[in-house]
Amino acid sequence: MIRLNPAVILGVPRLAMEDLEWNDIKLSRGSCLLPVTGSANRDSQVFPHGDMFEPVVRERTHLTFGGGIHKCIGAALGRAELHDALLLLDSVKGSFESRHPP
Image 1 (cartoon, rainbow, N blue to C red):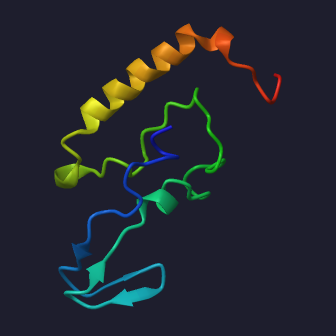
Image 2: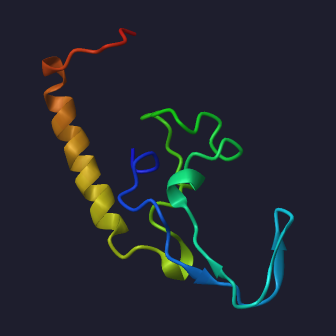
């Protein structure tokens, strides 16, 4: 759910620390890069069904919370809040009607 609907679509701007080439694109040192995590999280080369909500998939390779030294300090709180919201939804699931029966 967090992968498909990140709170922030655009990532934090980055500066290229050296000349580099990535996917046949050449970037000079000092170039500004703006990752679009909302799109990257749906990349079909990483997620075979990138536009589908698959609640049973335990994949944590999405970029919603960043990574490494740039990891979001609120990631644990976001996951905990989503966990609680899903538990609440599960407890009232009889109140919902599916548009697509199993």
